[in-house]
Image (cartoon, rainbow over all chains, first blue to last red; front, top):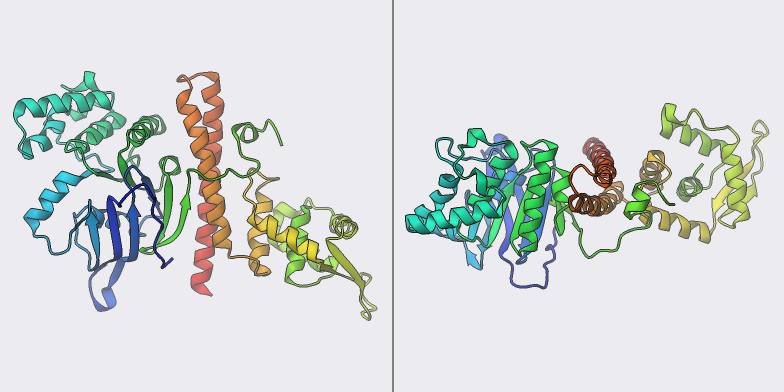
Length: 256
Length: 175
């Protein structure tokens, strides 16, 4: 699909990308991980990007969050173009506007849950007292107030991912970018993370989730399908009319 | 036999009953073994009565007992188009969706990948609804258990759609 993906009318995009490309290698070994992606994410919107492994969705997420630089094209985060930003300014913009959640949690194993959440606040220059208070609030928000003093090793997978989400929320980011957030979780833990993302969504948090888990994709307002580095389909999941034969009764085999 | 499947096959070109039957046998494989030999003719005569199909006696071919050629009427064409766009689920079974993809491609009614994408969107909307309902129920309640069953079934259907799409993509790459 080469035309521009539609935007919500709710406001200027929190995240905007135009003509994004990312290539690795050269000549015969050239790999086009991302080839010509346009995207607008409106404030408060949840967008899921789905596709098979190797389709370039993780690379795209890294580009969108400023963790990697595109070979061509431009990205705007909260209205600010990333083009030409030096490493230091890019890092600051990232810290102030983006929260990341990864499949493998990426928690510091030798720090407690609370310390893991405090760390980015301290790095952003907050006082130890303020950082501790905020970590307490965020752990409470993800339902882990009673696990604050636990090391990651003493937590379940779902709990670890919730700590990672709390950490991602530290700078009150304009957008949270999540890469396969349920990829390492069993179905019960997946449900916990689903609930948390739903809560964030209801609270107005803008979310971009890369996944191949249909359960988490189903929580999105909009689903984008990615194949071979490009978007091939876009479907709005909210506000649409449900087709005939849907409805929970019909799905349970009670009517029709 | 699902009437729309037969209509979609006729959208490709007017055909004899036995041609439709062998096409269906090929598309369904062993899953189609249970199909009665006369079923296609019953369906065709119903479609004719409903004005969705017209029938002409073909001349020649003395070795063929079946000389009727069936073709779509305008009303039949409309019915096919509506069926292609329909995303209701669960339908009469997986075979209907499977045949929809094959028939749509054979008769160039629609790109199968577009049909898959539309169906995926509808199933994800249903999954969203079931999941929300499941989360609102008390943990391990009887109601939550039924909803979990719906969620798991939709997930399985979505995985099959993924396989359908991969199959389409692979075939395009080699054609």
